[in-house]
Image 1 (cartoon, rainbow, N blue to C red):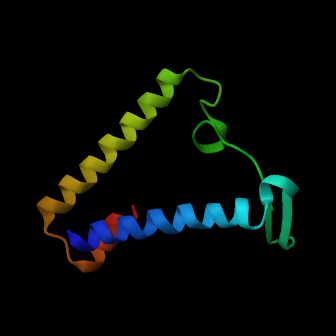
Image 2 (image 1 turned 180 degrees about the horizontal axis):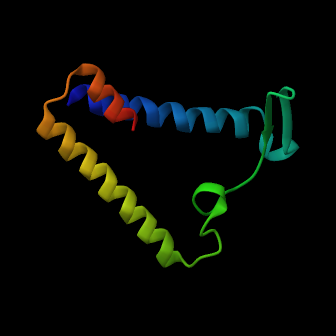
Length: 98
């Protein structure tokens, strides 16, 4: 279970750090567009207040809390599954990244 927790922490830190570096370090928030390797890699600034593709972006705060609750339930289910299965190292790492 340590590998799962460590993988989850590493994934979270890398995700947040990369977003911070691109948005603030490269000042994407100010310039709004950076062509890194056109046409393959282009950064465009935008805020998604919903879920994938902006779904539920205009919905009430209650729907956001429902989605947060659903995410917590899914994470809890993965943790329970991993604990009961006595997973190997790589399976724990995969579950942590999930």
